Length: 283
Image (tube, rainbow, N blue to C red; front, side):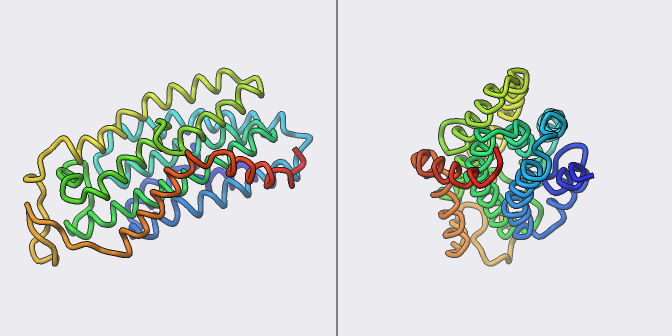
């Protein structure tokens, strides 16, 4: 029952049914909070409860979370392939990301705990940043953001476009942000635990995810800025002009960008911090 409850909170399959509709239907600022802070708290709580309350049953709940991680990676990534609404793409991406983090959690080891805690840092920053950028695009258009109406966004909003590029590539685990180290670390925890099959599943899931992550980048950059259609009367320039800048939104995205990219260059201090936090658990 605890695994079901925690699975619901972290949006892992098969307890994920609420996630795409809620992520799409909620105000984007609320979605940004749910995808970052709420997921971080749920995963850390899950790891603490399982390792503290049920250390002698790790061989049982470890396998349960490994299986949940596997089906989360499969369903999250394959469902994202057919989505057009960007918030729904990111919702299914969040389900797949939960699968990656559950790989570290399922090992129930000190290395798995450090991997999980480190992974959450670049993930939370990237998740918050992506939805903040989606919110900026929504304000320009006045309609839900899709891959079609994302055309030209990277040229019209250079900083937000580059930030989105880094965020989604960090989700994919490419060596541009701390997401690369995070994935490597959870794979190392699974390998150290003797679950090579779980590493293979994670690598294959990463390859699948590249398709829709690259699709977002293509939508922003592979179409000319002349295709941009800003809602008339929205208080910003129409096609061809620079939209009005929102200072607070840019600052929020900038902070997320610094954390996401900076975590790649501050690996050792963050790993030490994660190790110190994990030392409080009976691992």
